[in-house]
Length: 249
Ligand SMILES: [Zn+2]
Ligand SMILES: [Zn+2]
Image 1 (cartoon, rainbow, N blue to C red):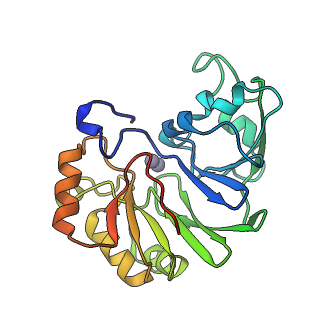
Image 2 (image 1 turned 45 degrees about the vertical axis):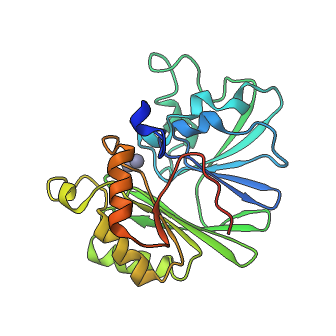
């Protein structure tokens, strides 16, 4: 859930949305409420990759600024089962009575397609692997000119996938990892589909990722809580993600 208020002024309160800039290419990872802040003027039509279809990851689509702009094009890659049309899957939510317009009724154009790997976007390449989450969630590895980033959100560890995903994230420059719970919180939230801080630390150690950002903060985690947690970690290469920050690889 998006949250607002002074107690969220450092880490932010939007739901999942990240913009990757790779040369002239622009790739959004998920379309949570943060998508409302997306820039409209981009060198090339951007591509939005959806990890899964939980509401917090698609909440921003209806207010995506480029949809209001005549002639603009955005590609949207949707994880959908064989046989299911990606547009139908999303328009199950983006249609009356839940929302006034379908996603293809705007002035700007959304070109929907089914997500299948690898995805080539200019010189950037995206590989994927399915993680453990209610209904499933795709992890992405983006590679561009020798640099890489792994987006591993909405993931609850279990042994087989944890090993596979730590190989998937091997040596990456930046690992964005599900940082929803503290170790204490996780004890009462097993099976909710998210990780605790100790899982994240094991993942960075096993994968050899150079830096890690803890993402997908629990809506109840205020700035104070996250700052305390970050200080206790005391690691230079592990931080909680801050809304609006830019990281260069
Ligand atoms: Zn989810
Ligand atoms: Zn989520």
